Each structure stands twice: as C-alpha cells, then as structure tokens.
Image (cartoon, rainbow, N blue to C red; front, side, top):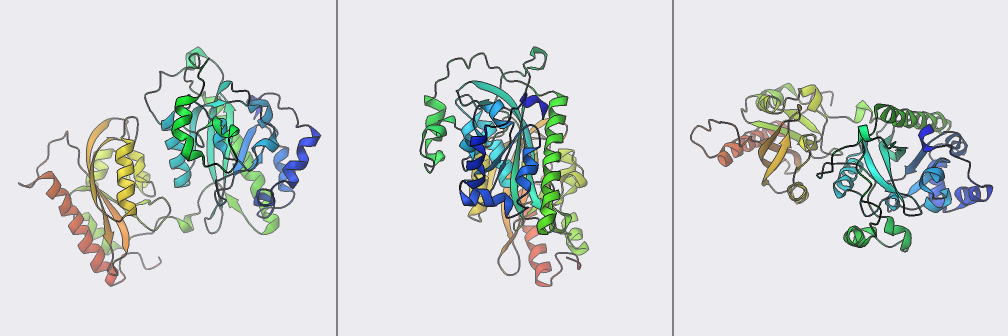
Length: 407
C-alpha cells in the first residue's frame, strides 16, 4: 500500500518484542498458519493490522511495517491492545457504531475515518475492515484492518457529517494513557467530552478517491492471499468470505408456499445463525424496498438503515431480540435507490414446535403510503402476518418440513 508513505523498516530492536511478547498474541497467527506467516506479512507494503476476536478485548496480534510511518506508533506498542487507540475526540460516534456492527456481523466495512497519530495530530484514512474465515467451517479467525491515507483535496471533500455511518474499530486515543486492562467502555463518554480539540476545526471530512478504495481492496486481497498460502502448511485454508456451506438454509417448498400467501411486507431472519440473516422476503417487502430476493437473502436487516436511523430504536430492537420479546418502533429506513420512508416496524420472535425461537419476523409498514387494512388498525394488520407465520412454522416444524430435505 504505497500511500502509507515510504514506510521505512522498524528499528532492529523493535522486532524482538513482536516475536517474543505475549505468548497468546504471538501464537494467534503462528498456531493457525505457520511460523513463516510473520515474515510473509512483513514483506507486504502498507499500513494494516490483524486482530483476534476470540481473545478478550479483541486485541491487535499483528502490525505491519508500514504502520509506524502512518501512525507514529512503533509496532511493539500496539500489539495486544485494542485498535481504538488510534481514535480520538473528533472521531464520529456514529462511525464507532458502524464498525462495531460490522465486527459483530462478521462482515466487511469500508469508510473514511479521522484517526490520530501518536503525537496527537489528526489525519484522515480510509479504513478497510475485512473478516478472515476458516474456508471449511466458516469459523471467524481474524479481522483485517487496512488503513489508506486520504489525500487532502478540496475537490473531494465531503459535506459536514450529519451522523452518517462511517467506520473505525472503536474510539479513544485516551486509551494510550490508561492501564492496558482498564475497560475503555467506562471512559467512552469522557473521551468525547474532555479531549483537547485544538487544531481540529481545520480537519474537514474527506472522501476517499476510487484509486484509494481500490488500493485498500488490493492490499486486503494480498494479505488474505498470504494468509491462505501459509495456512495450507498447517492444513488450514482461509477465505475472506464465509463459505456457502454455512450460509443461509434453504426453506422447503411447503414453507415457501405458506409464506407466499401472506400479503404484508415482511422478512424472516434466522435466529440461530450469525448476524441473523434474512432467509425469506415477501413480495410486498420487495416492492417496498426495491431489493430483489437475490440481493436481500443472507443480509442483515440493517441493510435498510442509513443517516438518521435512530440508534436508540435499533438498540431497543436488539434488547427485545435478546429477551425474546416483541416490539414495535418508528424507524427511518432507506430503499435500494436511497429514498427514505418512515417505517412502522414490528419485530417478533417465532417459535418452532419445541418452543425454541427459530426465526424473527420483521413486519414493515410505510406510514406515508396509502394502505387498505380491510377495516383493521395498522398494528392489528401487522400482527396478522405474525400469526400466520407462527401457524406455518409450528405446523411444519413438527413434521420436519421447514427446510429442504438436503438441509
């Protein structure tokens, strides 16, 4: 990644702590790939990190040679720490949520981000975040974070941020000044209030160019290729995409037929799969959002979120999902073409014949459109879809006919 500058090599004295520091950090890579993987990664240009989501705190387990020239941090300083130490006072809080959601969803994410160097000076980078999966069973092994500097160019500057999702691996430069085991979350509010903001007024949001975006993707592909090459030595193969074998289940024709008779706009998400992917979308939902079934199946419902979508309402939904309870919220959502609509959204758990939550139904209603509810209230109209799905799931799960026989 050439835009990290002429990334000079680290001083020789910095290499020993990287190889022989915390054993768990060091073995995160070598145990899964081979002892040669570190040398292979060292040969790659650019500023990038590898983090291990299976370890407490999701720490950095590898830092590239290009990192010091971009951030001012020595490689040994960041190992074992959270990637949030690059963030600071003017980092957009909505961007924090966006990356946090991407990590939780185990999906790629790319966005412009205001980072901070070790000396406290701000700089804009394009963050390219990508998961690394076990190619056979879909286990998440690492997260890759590539940082490409965004050139200062007035023609490419964005309008002032209005809370649109951005991207980063969390938030707080202050963490560099607290104990390593001090929970950053307990200081999150303080960091955004008390940090020194001198000189930040001149840092207007920037937009990454197409070449910078392509560079980030190319760098990420090279890194995944190197990991895959050296993982073969241990019998492990990795991939930047979750394998199809652990994708969404195929619903039976009987189940699809029952769902197809329901007129309301809704989707079903699978409650037992990572990130609760959409496994069914009704005709009315396709008409409402503009997405085709091929585009929407396997996605999370956050695909409808955008600037202005209430984070409080999303958190309310998450809390009710965790407690296996139904909820109704008023949400600003977005169609595929970017147009917005006010969505009266009802989310409810759907239990199978054994009483276990198998799906969640998300019933969408565009409150700005004209509807014929056949004399019913909008809420009762939505609950009609919930009841119909519950009947279908309980009946077919008892006979084992929810999924295709091959599933």
